[in-house]
Length: 283
Image (cartoon, rainbow, N blue to C red; front, side):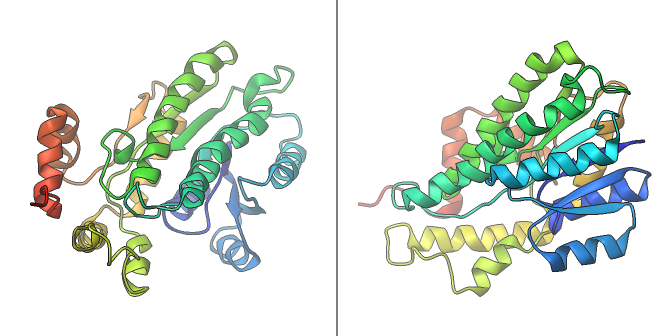
């Protein structure tokens, strides 16, 4: 039995991963935050088992581990996909520190807590039957290329790139693999919500105009982005391939949006962002 736990499966990328794996024969434990999302997911595919999980709530994580353990009945868990995450924009020197901390609580500490809780089921408990499982961490192109106005978010994704590499090296003794999937722009409504809500909240700061440009750019990137199903495809490959890569990058226009940004000198990348967003030094 192929089995997987997915956090943040209520919508977008997480939902697409849950639906693809359930359709392809996986027993899916899909992490959701409310009953309506649970009902909607289970109605779409009976192989999806919604579980209520807030990755910042240790008691909820423990309860889900117990639920999954009972259903596995001594078998190893095949996969854990850490997808739950938040992203809020703002200049790093003005963004409230509590908001910045929240990014780390969810995107980093929540993911680590989930890994710690499920790694016995993945194979650290060697008494369980079956092959060892894999951890897939959903990072971002921002995990390798930091963006203005998403400093809190991209910092957490940088951290998760490192966490993934560390887990892969440490957990090798149990045969447990850890793989990063770092998407670029994906067709989800995350930035549309900010635009409909009246803007970004920093209009009266020195960065107001640049942030408005950035928000427009992000909304357009989302409209032109890859469908979330492309990320789901990469996740299934990461979980199923006999020789998976350590990192997958489903990114639209990959040459300009990924390879060049990673390969150019940092000062050149600075200039690209400065020119695009009107961040030239003020007289």
